[in-house]
Amino acid sequence: MTTDPITISPKTHISEAYDLMQRYNVRRLPVVENEKVVGIISFGDVREAGPSDASSLTKYEVDFLVAKLTVEEIMTQSPKTLSKDASLHDAAQLMLDNKIGGLPVLDGDKLVGMVTESDVFRAVLEVCG
Image (cartoon, rainbow, N blue to C red; front, side, top):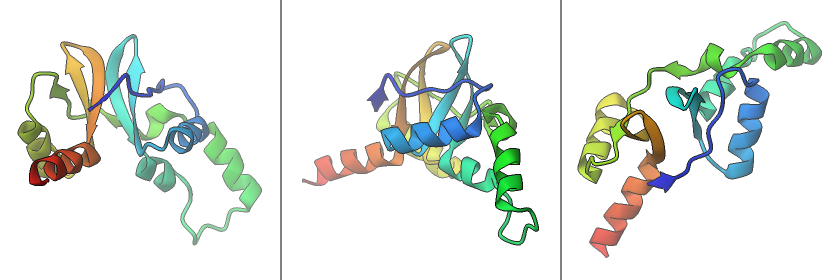
């Protein structure tokens, strides 16, 4: 688990979400408002927010439209979460069942970490030697 994960506000522009993901080498960010997790945004969400390759918009029009988008417009609301007391098995099962790559970890309503598929793989490798 990554403790003290990088978070983002729902009102933040997606260009800043993209920059944070690149800077900290993460693929998803918990979206926090008033100290509560209200969503999650992934690199895929940001990538899909842009127009398709078949769009007739110019690069400048695309840049203008994307610059106006905020995290809350494309985030997954009320994401699946994990209790801080949950097992690694619970985390892996929840990710597998829901086809997701990461889960915010909560202590009550407070965000205390993120568990990703990479954390699960690391644990498996430690056990397998």
